[in-house]
Amino acid sequence: MAVSTEKIKLNKFGLTKTVPVRMTIGQFDKMNELGIELLEHDQKMLENSEGMTTLDYMLAERRVQKLMFDFVQDTFSLTDEEILKIKDSVDATQFKEAFSYISDRLRGVTDKQYEEAVKREKALREKEAKEDPKEGSVESAD
Image 1: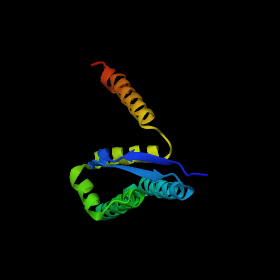
Image 2: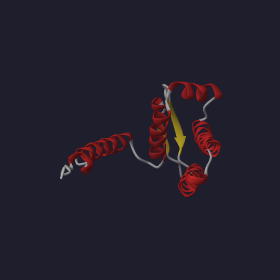
Image 3: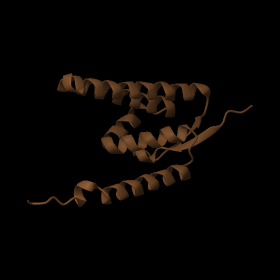
């Protein structure tokens, strides 16, 4: 039985490259392991945010960023030069969006499904911004 292969575009990382990725159990395991580490990081940051120093925060963020870059490099067989290009081409927000894209694609979401989900999320945010009770509330000057 053949293992399915997905072709994943890396243009969101600033690379003009499409990479075939074999969707094996090992690949899913790596992705799940990273997901667990990211969730543990978020939980730790929430629980300890008041007691953390700036250095603690920066070290924790750097560790997470390294985990994400290592995952991208390993999954897509990127060279050190390609990783440097990503770091020099995109900002933190773009990297997170690109990482979200590849995570969804690795979980079997098609490009079309991903774009539809992004459109729905954008529409929801715009709707929430319009309905923000802070903007619409009027206080009495009594």
